[in-house]
Image 1 (cartoon, rainbow, N blue to C red):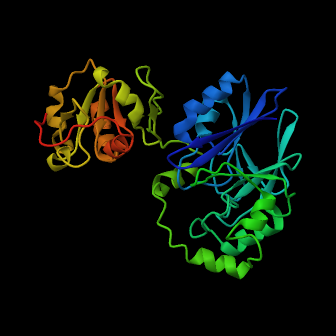
Image 2: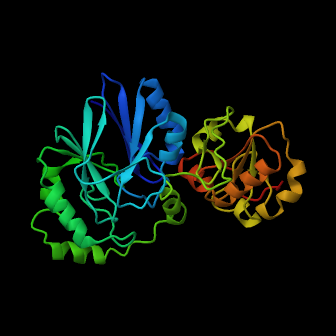
Amino acid sequence: MLFRQLIDSRSSTYTYLLADAAARDAVLIDPVFEQFARDAALVRELGLTLRCTLETHVHADHVTAAWLFHERLGSAIVVSADAGVEGADRLVREGDVVTFGTEALSVLSTPGHTAGCVSYVTRDRRAVFTGDALMIRGAGRTDFQQGDAHRMFRSVHDKLFALPDDCMVYPAHDYGGRLASSIGEERAFNPRLGGARSEADFVGYMANLGLPHPKQIDVALPANLRGGRPMAGAADKGAPEWTPARRSFAGVLEVEAEWLGEHLRDVEVVDVREPDEWNGELGRIPGARHLPLGGLRDRLGELARDRPVVAVCRSGGRSAEASLILERAGFPRAANLSGGMIRWHALGLPIETGAARGG
């Protein structure tokens, strides 16, 4: 079997590409909307036919790319029958089998993180894709989306821990840079679920995590309940030719700081922060023009329309709105700096500091 593990660094989400190496039929597990271009390019370059995208559950921290792959590559959307997703091509339950070429994945119902969580096990039982039911030395939270710590404990102990010790565990997320584990390892060392931990131990542990609300849930959850299909009127404009940018589910075209650092002479950088931020501790990008967001619409005439324009703010929020303002005003090459000055500063890219003349 051909196997590739991919990551979306923003949400720490793992996407898995599996294929029958001979038949060239493939499936993609937990694809991320913003990574569609990357993953579609990999499918194309490897000469694969994507048969379906598989969701381990309805995610709250990113939007799935299932709908995009369905529209562009004709792949089927596969999700749990208990997930409540509209527009799926196939709803799976315990014991169902997903085939691609001569390869197959069997479905385990593993609720607890959400009511509609499933895991996918390879035919030889050498690998299992667990979503957020069982993570590397952890487990997904159980405090929203019909989560239930009792159900999760039983899902893991009765089903996942019943797999062979050498069965590799591939979760949907990891926040510590770990790629994989094994059933034997997790049965022995998982601090929440392994060793001699009882169901009462686990339930008490999960009840006291005190985690903040997922930042993207208000966007991700309703979108994922539609299989990643944008709301009516939301444009999927794709990626432009002038930059290796990606368009977020919200419709914002975004460039990475590393790319901008190499192309400062080729673009106009518009800093939309307030004056105290412009002269603040994060500094500013050399050569940037200062046009605070509140007055941007009134000063669009100061910007050249024959050059790409990249908007920047502290973290990328206000500049996302600025880039949309520019696009709607007819600037054909407008984008947002992903992560804003926080990421620019963290990467050690060049800055100017102190008082300076604004735009």
